[in-house]
Image 1: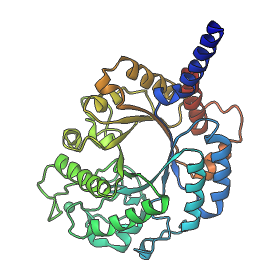
Image 2: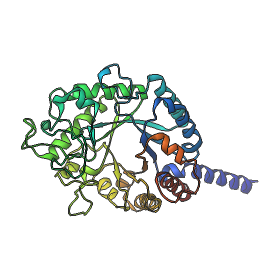
Image 3: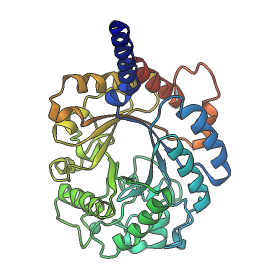
Image 4: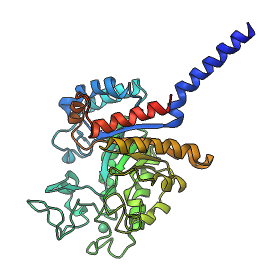
Length: 360
Ligand SMILES: [Zn+2]
């Protein structure tokens, strides 16, 4: 009897260990995607139930930006703003399925896109870091202004009062304990013509803005998440000016608070830069996009890094977050197509399949 009981006990322990294994191997299993437009919220909820839950996604970053019916700043509402009740439906399905829901609004950079000026600078042109750069009617890259996206001036005395009001409103609506501030691809920073920023150290300007946002969130019990590219050096590493920094912001990696969570995006190669962040004491999730073979390797890498790390560093390798750069509903539609060999959905399938395979 004793031996049967022992066998039973042992097998139930194995089952328990198995059940928890994916959590111990990949604490963060994420998807980062544009928030659905109001008319597609119900379809998106079906997608959460049918695709994200069975694939064991536990973190959903929704890029809301200004598509919310702000009451603090109605002038910042974008063209298809979610209502509070839309958001509550998303909160409810995520809570039920133990998915951490993290809203995103791009802060600092990405205040314009091609020929379109974003809501913040349209309503508050005084916040523009480079007011002398006119957005062209027909945008092309490269251009003589080096215009990719506009930034707000992090040292403008009124900018935080406005952006933190909308950040708080979105975080409250999403009942969020973390907020993603974007902060990727910030090319306009410390501009020579900005009366506040000219001549300042760009790494200090970047780190200062990270700290200001982090402190605001921490006072409300919330974590800050950002993209990692401004914290990596682009030239010696060969990573280039997009997924790493050519504008001397990379030293900010040693200046930002250690509780900022990094999403380390690399789309063409499985770059091992998570090792840099983790060994600096920062938690990091590798973020793939649309090449399934690269994605699969990135998942394997995180598992290997965790296995080989010191106990001090191991938990900084938090997991993997698939990024999606089309409209949310287009990704949902992609999910209905079988046997796609490449693209965002195939990458997402590769990520979740690999995580589940390694957790068996
Ligand atoms: Zn400035």
